Image (cartoon, rainbow, N blue to C red; front, side):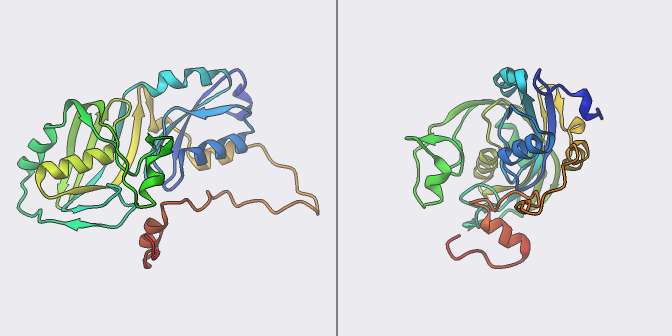
Length: 264
Protein backbone atom coordinates (compact mmCIF):
# COMPACT_ATOMS: atom_id res chain seq x y z
CA UNK A 1 0.00 0.00 0.00
CA UNK A 2 1.28 3.46 -0.91
CA UNK A 3 2.22 5.97 1.76
CA UNK A 4 0.11 9.11 2.10
CA UNK A 5 2.93 11.30 0.76
CA UNK A 6 2.91 9.33 -2.51
CA UNK A 7 -0.63 10.45 -3.37
CA UNK A 8 -1.36 13.67 -5.25
CA UNK A 9 -5.05 14.16 -4.57
CA UNK A 10 -5.27 17.54 -6.32
CA UNK A 11 -3.65 16.31 -9.53
CA UNK A 12 -6.00 13.33 -9.33
CA UNK A 13 -6.09 9.83 -7.90
CA UNK A 14 -8.41 6.87 -8.33
CA UNK A 15 -8.97 5.22 -4.94
CA UNK A 16 -10.72 1.89 -4.52
CA UNK A 17 -12.68 1.60 -1.26
CA UNK A 18 -14.37 -1.48 0.19
CA UNK A 19 -17.64 0.00 1.47
CA UNK A 20 -18.86 -1.44 4.79
CA UNK A 21 -22.39 -2.78 5.30
CA UNK A 22 -25.09 -0.16 6.11
CA UNK A 23 -22.93 2.75 4.88
CA UNK A 24 -24.29 4.81 2.02
CA UNK A 25 -21.95 5.65 -0.83
CA UNK A 26 -21.85 9.22 0.47
CA UNK A 27 -20.77 7.91 3.90
CA UNK A 28 -17.80 6.27 2.20
CA UNK A 29 -16.88 9.40 0.27
CA UNK A 30 -17.14 11.55 3.39
CA UNK A 31 -15.05 9.18 5.51
CA UNK A 32 -12.20 9.01 2.99
CA UNK A 33 -12.37 12.76 2.27
CA UNK A 34 -12.15 13.72 5.94
CA UNK A 35 -9.62 11.08 6.97
CA UNK A 36 -7.18 11.85 4.15
CA UNK A 37 -8.01 15.58 3.94
CA UNK A 38 -8.96 15.50 0.28
CA UNK A 39 -10.44 18.71 -1.12
CA UNK A 40 -12.30 17.36 -4.15
CA UNK A 41 -13.64 13.79 -4.36
CA UNK A 42 -16.58 11.90 -5.82
CA UNK A 43 -17.66 8.31 -6.43
CA UNK A 44 -18.20 6.48 -9.72
CA UNK A 45 -21.35 4.48 -9.03
CA UNK A 46 -23.75 4.27 -6.10
CA UNK A 47 -23.82 1.18 -3.90
CA UNK A 48 -26.87 0.52 -1.69
CA UNK A 49 -26.40 0.70 2.11
CA UNK A 50 -27.23 -3.02 2.39
CA UNK A 51 -24.49 -3.89 -0.10
CA UNK A 52 -20.75 -4.06 0.49
CA UNK A 53 -17.80 -3.91 -1.83
CA UNK A 54 -16.15 -1.81 -4.46
CA UNK A 55 -16.66 1.94 -4.46
CA UNK A 56 -14.44 3.75 -6.97
CA UNK A 57 -13.46 7.21 -5.70
CA UNK A 58 -11.96 9.90 -7.93
CA UNK A 59 -10.11 12.91 -6.58
CA UNK A 60 -8.99 16.22 -8.06
CA UNK A 61 -8.76 16.22 -11.84
CA UNK A 62 -9.64 12.52 -11.96
CA UNK A 63 -13.25 13.44 -11.13
CA UNK A 64 -13.58 14.16 -14.87
CA UNK A 65 -13.33 10.38 -15.42
CA UNK A 66 -16.32 9.52 -13.20
CA UNK A 67 -18.83 9.20 -16.06
CA UNK A 68 -16.45 7.00 -18.04
CA UNK A 69 -15.89 4.66 -15.08
CA UNK A 70 -19.61 4.52 -14.25
CA UNK A 71 -20.38 3.32 -17.76
CA UNK A 72 -18.21 0.20 -17.42
CA UNK A 73 -19.64 -3.23 -16.68
CA UNK A 74 -20.16 -4.33 -13.07
CA UNK A 75 -19.73 -7.66 -11.33
CA UNK A 76 -21.61 -8.71 -8.19
CA UNK A 77 -21.87 -11.72 -5.92
CA UNK A 78 -24.61 -12.32 -3.40
CA UNK A 79 -27.52 -14.40 -2.17
CA UNK A 80 -31.20 -14.64 -3.09
CA UNK A 81 -33.77 -16.17 -0.75
CA UNK A 82 -36.49 -18.04 -2.61
CA UNK A 83 -40.06 -18.38 -1.34
CA UNK A 84 -40.38 -14.93 0.22
CA UNK A 85 -40.88 -11.43 -1.17
CA UNK A 86 -40.46 -7.98 0.37
CA UNK A 87 -41.63 -4.57 -0.93
CA UNK A 88 -38.02 -3.38 -1.28
CA UNK A 89 -36.85 -6.70 -2.85
CA UNK A 90 -34.21 -6.93 -0.08
CA UNK A 91 -33.88 -6.83 3.73
CA UNK A 92 -34.86 -3.18 4.14
CA UNK A 93 -38.52 -4.17 4.56
CA UNK A 94 -40.44 -7.08 6.10
CA UNK A 95 -41.57 -10.17 4.20
CA UNK A 96 -44.99 -9.52 2.68
CA UNK A 97 -45.67 -12.90 1.05
CA UNK A 98 -44.43 -16.49 1.27
CA UNK A 99 -44.85 -19.32 -1.24
CA UNK A 100 -43.64 -22.94 -1.52
CA UNK A 101 -40.18 -23.46 -2.97
CA UNK A 102 -39.10 -26.96 -1.85
CA UNK A 103 -40.27 -28.54 -5.11
CA UNK A 104 -37.74 -26.56 -7.15
CA UNK A 105 -34.77 -28.42 -8.61
CA UNK A 106 -31.34 -27.03 -9.34
CA UNK A 107 -31.98 -27.58 -13.04
CA UNK A 108 -35.22 -25.58 -12.92
CA UNK A 109 -33.58 -22.72 -11.04
CA UNK A 110 -30.64 -22.68 -13.44
CA UNK A 111 -32.92 -22.67 -16.48
CA UNK A 112 -34.94 -19.77 -15.05
CA UNK A 113 -31.76 -17.79 -14.40
CA UNK A 114 -30.61 -18.18 -17.99
CA UNK A 115 -33.80 -16.46 -19.19
CA UNK A 116 -32.31 -13.20 -17.93
CA UNK A 117 -28.97 -13.42 -19.71
CA UNK A 118 -28.73 -10.90 -22.53
CA UNK A 119 -30.42 -7.58 -23.27
CA UNK A 120 -33.70 -6.97 -21.43
CA UNK A 121 -36.10 -4.34 -20.13
CA UNK A 122 -35.87 -4.16 -16.34
CA UNK A 123 -38.11 -2.13 -14.01
CA UNK A 124 -36.19 -0.60 -11.06
CA UNK A 125 -37.52 -1.18 -7.52
CA UNK A 126 -39.97 1.21 -5.89
CA UNK A 127 -37.31 1.54 -3.19
CA UNK A 128 -34.69 3.06 -5.48
CA UNK A 129 -33.06 6.41 -6.21
CA UNK A 130 -34.85 6.74 -9.56
CA UNK A 131 -36.43 10.19 -9.83
CA UNK A 132 -40.19 10.41 -10.39
CA UNK A 133 -41.56 13.93 -10.89
CA UNK A 134 -38.56 15.39 -9.09
CA UNK A 135 -38.72 13.00 -6.12
CA UNK A 136 -36.69 9.90 -5.38
CA UNK A 137 -38.84 6.80 -5.71
CA UNK A 138 -37.72 5.53 -2.29
CA UNK A 139 -39.01 8.72 -0.64
CA UNK A 140 -42.48 7.99 -2.02
CA UNK A 141 -42.25 4.27 -1.21
CA UNK A 142 -41.41 4.95 2.44
CA UNK A 143 -44.58 7.05 2.64
CA UNK A 144 -46.60 4.16 1.24
CA UNK A 145 -47.02 5.82 -2.18
CA UNK A 146 -46.43 3.85 -5.37
CA UNK A 147 -44.50 5.56 -8.14
CA UNK A 148 -44.84 4.83 -11.83
CA UNK A 149 -41.34 3.74 -12.80
CA UNK A 150 -40.46 3.06 -16.42
CA UNK A 151 -38.50 -0.02 -17.42
CA UNK A 152 -34.90 0.52 -18.49
CA UNK A 153 -32.75 -1.23 -21.05
CA UNK A 154 -30.00 -3.25 -19.35
CA UNK A 155 -27.80 -6.20 -20.19
CA UNK A 156 -27.00 -9.23 -18.06
CA UNK A 157 -23.75 -10.59 -19.49
CA UNK A 158 -23.39 -13.51 -17.06
CA UNK A 159 -25.70 -15.00 -14.42
CA UNK A 160 -24.00 -17.89 -12.65
CA UNK A 161 -25.51 -19.80 -9.73
CA UNK A 162 -22.60 -20.72 -7.46
CA UNK A 163 -24.51 -22.46 -4.64
CA UNK A 164 -28.05 -23.78 -4.24
CA UNK A 165 -29.09 -24.65 -0.68
CA UNK A 166 -32.80 -23.93 -0.64
CA UNK A 167 -34.15 -21.49 0.15
CA UNK A 168 -30.80 -19.76 -0.49
CA UNK A 169 -29.21 -19.34 -3.91
CA UNK A 170 -25.75 -17.75 -4.26
CA UNK A 171 -24.90 -16.06 -7.54
CA UNK A 172 -22.38 -14.14 -9.61
CA UNK A 173 -23.69 -11.54 -12.06
CA UNK A 174 -21.87 -9.47 -14.68
CA UNK A 175 -24.06 -6.67 -15.95
CA UNK A 176 -24.30 -3.24 -17.55
CA UNK A 177 -24.65 0.10 -15.84
CA UNK A 178 -28.13 0.68 -14.42
CA UNK A 179 -28.90 -2.96 -13.60
CA UNK A 180 -30.66 -3.52 -10.27
CA UNK A 181 -29.76 -6.84 -8.67
CA UNK A 182 -32.79 -6.45 -6.39
CA UNK A 183 -34.99 -6.34 -9.48
CA UNK A 184 -33.23 -9.44 -10.77
CA UNK A 185 -34.18 -11.18 -7.48
CA UNK A 186 -37.81 -10.15 -8.00
CA UNK A 187 -37.83 -11.30 -11.62
CA UNK A 188 -36.16 -14.65 -10.91
CA UNK A 189 -38.65 -15.32 -8.11
CA UNK A 190 -41.55 -14.47 -10.42
CA UNK A 191 -40.19 -16.78 -13.13
CA UNK A 192 -39.96 -19.61 -10.59
CA UNK A 193 -43.45 -18.88 -9.24
CA UNK A 194 -42.28 -18.68 -5.64
CA UNK A 195 -41.02 -15.13 -5.22
CA UNK A 196 -37.55 -14.13 -4.01
CA UNK A 197 -35.63 -11.29 -2.44
CA UNK A 198 -31.99 -10.26 -2.08
CA UNK A 199 -30.34 -11.03 1.27
CA UNK A 200 -26.68 -10.24 0.51
CA UNK A 201 -24.87 -8.27 -2.19
CA UNK A 202 -21.21 -7.46 -2.81
CA UNK A 203 -19.82 -5.51 -5.77
CA UNK A 204 -16.57 -7.15 -6.78
CA UNK A 205 -15.62 -5.31 -9.96
CA UNK A 206 -16.21 -2.19 -12.09
CA UNK A 207 -14.41 -2.56 -15.42
CA UNK A 208 -10.80 -3.43 -14.57
CA UNK A 209 -11.09 -2.21 -10.95
CA UNK A 210 -11.41 -5.06 -8.45
CA UNK A 211 -12.43 -5.14 -4.80
CA UNK A 212 -9.36 -7.26 -3.98
CA UNK A 213 -7.28 -4.12 -4.58
CA UNK A 214 -9.52 -1.83 -2.51
CA UNK A 215 -8.68 -0.03 0.70
CA UNK A 216 -10.58 -1.17 3.76
CA UNK A 217 -11.75 1.21 6.46
CA UNK A 218 -8.73 0.12 8.55
CA UNK A 219 -6.41 0.93 5.62
CA UNK A 220 -7.87 4.42 5.31
CA UNK A 221 -7.49 5.01 9.03
CA UNK A 222 -3.88 3.81 8.89
CA UNK A 223 -3.12 6.23 6.03
CA UNK A 224 -4.73 9.20 7.77
CA UNK A 225 -2.32 11.87 9.05
CA UNK A 226 -2.30 12.43 12.82
CA UNK A 227 -4.71 15.07 14.05
CA UNK A 228 -3.63 17.76 16.51
CA UNK A 229 -4.76 17.35 20.09
CA UNK A 230 -8.05 19.22 20.65
CA UNK A 231 -8.03 22.28 22.87
CA UNK A 232 -10.06 22.53 26.07
CA UNK A 233 -12.95 24.28 24.28
CA UNK A 234 -13.12 21.90 21.32
CA UNK A 235 -16.38 20.13 20.62
CA UNK A 236 -16.29 16.32 21.06
CA UNK A 237 -15.44 14.41 17.90
CA UNK A 238 -17.82 11.92 16.37
CA UNK A 239 -16.81 8.28 16.69
CA UNK A 240 -16.61 7.85 12.91
CA UNK A 241 -19.71 5.71 12.57
CA UNK A 242 -22.21 6.75 9.91
CA UNK A 243 -25.44 8.33 11.16
CA UNK A 244 -28.61 6.32 11.62
CA UNK A 245 -30.01 6.08 8.11
CA UNK A 246 -33.66 6.44 7.17
CA UNK A 247 -35.04 3.21 5.77
CA UNK A 248 -32.78 0.85 7.72
CA UNK A 249 -34.78 0.79 10.97
CA UNK A 250 -36.38 -2.57 10.17
CA UNK A 251 -33.04 -4.12 9.16
CA UNK A 252 -31.31 -2.80 12.30
CA UNK A 253 -34.08 -4.15 14.53
CA UNK A 254 -33.88 -7.59 12.89
CA UNK A 255 -30.11 -7.73 13.29
CA UNK A 256 -30.45 -6.75 16.97
CA UNK A 257 -33.05 -9.46 17.49
CA UNK A 258 -35.70 -6.96 18.49
CA UNK A 259 -39.10 -5.96 17.17
CA UNK A 260 -39.23 -3.65 14.17
CA UNK A 261 -40.53 -0.10 14.62
CA UNK A 262 -44.32 0.24 14.66
CA UNK A 263 -44.37 2.07 11.33
CA UNK A 264 -41.96 -0.31 9.53
